[in-house]
Amino acid sequence: MAKKRGIKGKSVDARAPEWEPLLDLAPAHVADFMWMGSVELHDKTRLQLYKHYWTRDYLHLDGDGRAFIHAEPQRYEEIEPGWVLARVLDEHLADKDWLDFLRPRYPQLDEIRIEWTDSATKNGITRERSEYVVKHCGLRYRDCAPHGAGVPRPREFRTLFLGVDQDGVELEVAAVDGEYGEGFVVFHAAELRDDYRYLLARGERWRQ
Image 1 (cartoon, rainbow, N blue to C red):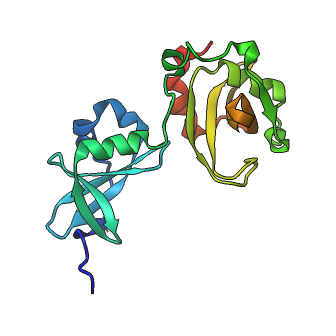
Image 2: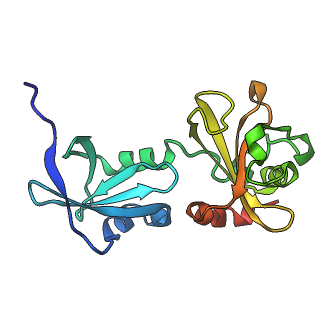
Image 3: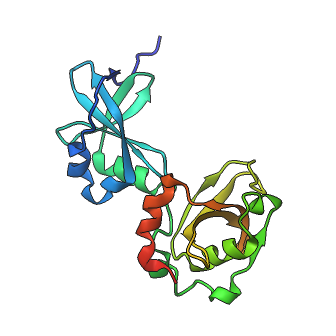
């Protein structure tokens, strides 16, 4: 029988969030995480669990600056904190400040080609409104979109645009890259969910 890896741990009742481990490791990113609870390892080490809003990945941190990963069911292994932080932050994030990074290569507003699937308007958001957000939001996020729910092709990278329409209504617009990587195909548009509101605030200064 193969030897189990890591240290056994179990969830413990913790009524109040503990932010100190995350503040020590990544103070600039605390607003991007949710506190999800605590785990106590067999050696009495207490881990705090933090889930990233966008990547949905976890940090497991103790009070002494150590980081752990969930290696097997109810087992945890220690890992280098800087490496796991970079993985959690960057695995599915890109173009966080696209006007800083991509502006020299990004097309002019009237050159951005946009198409729509049938599902793009099912929430009552017109094509004109979603187009305005795509072209003016100034901030976009990317992750791997599962097939279905309006996504036109399997295993696509989804781009999420967060911004306001012509009337100042906060919207979320999701699209995949167009054919040959040119432009975007919008498959979802809706009024902004509360889960994305903090991300919208981060892009305020980049809107065109």
